[in-house]
Image 1 (cartoon, helix red, strand yellow):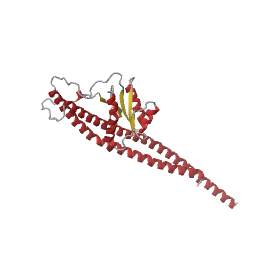
Image 2 (cartoon, rainbow, N blue to C red):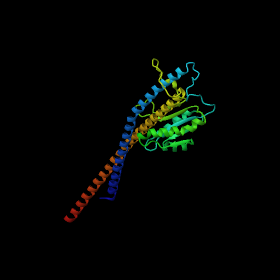
Image 3 (tube, rainbow, N blue to C red):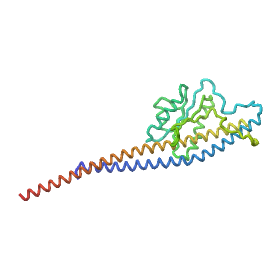
Image 4 (cartoon, rainbow, N blue to C red):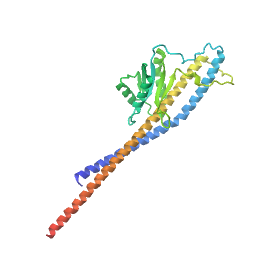
Amino acid sequence: MSTRRGELQARIAGVRQLEAVVGAVRGMAASRSAEARAHLPGVHACAAMLAQAIGDALALAGAADPAGAAAQPPLQAPAAPATPRVSVVIGSDQGFVGTFNERLLDTAQAGAGAHGTVYYIVGQRAAALAAERGLAPAWSAPMAAHPGDVAALATRLAHALEPQLAAARPAALSAWHACPPPATSPIRELRLLPFDYGRFTRPAHRQPPLASLPAPLLLARLAESYIHTQLCEALLQSFAAENEARMRTMLSARDHVRATLARLEMQAGRERQEQITNEIIELGAAGAGEEA
């Protein structure tokens, strides 16, 4: 075997190994995306239950205060002047996701506008990109490695936000996250504060529930639980979208690897043909010399 053909065979073997790695990464991404999607119905059911409870608590608050003296529910108070916005950006920990983190940060920064913004970043890749842009996140944490870790991460994030919210009510608290297909928008802003109680339906023909807590405290705790559920959904959506982006990147890489493999195999075939031709010529020349 010629040196050139040996080099080509070694490169072909290396490219085939790379093709196997690309296929494995794509398979893992598909599995994780499907797992994240499988968790979403449970989160939606929890959110629906909490929404009904908040509606009941609003009816209870109205029954306890028919004159409307306590019409301003908790977590809905207006922000003090000149308070910053708080943006939670949910990015990725791992690579091979194309411009996933860039698009998230671009959208979050555009949404912040001219207001001062405090950033909380989920995902080490997103945090590193934010630092490169000079955003200096107030807090960052790795993205959940598995969908089952999302609830604990949402709790950590909520606890990290508490000092910021206690110091001064922000002008707005939003979470920016990616959405997997077939979502109409690839990136969504989830507005968490001020908390919108108007979206919850109050029961019209039902007795207010019995409660052992004062209505304002009950509403505050239910709203906090609802926000936690929203954070869980945002994290799961972004986790699924991240892995969808990784699948697309791996599909593109697979096409490139296969094109490279086909080119190398063609070159190896030509080298083999040239080697056979040269051997035939040498044998023919040797036979002619013996006859002479």
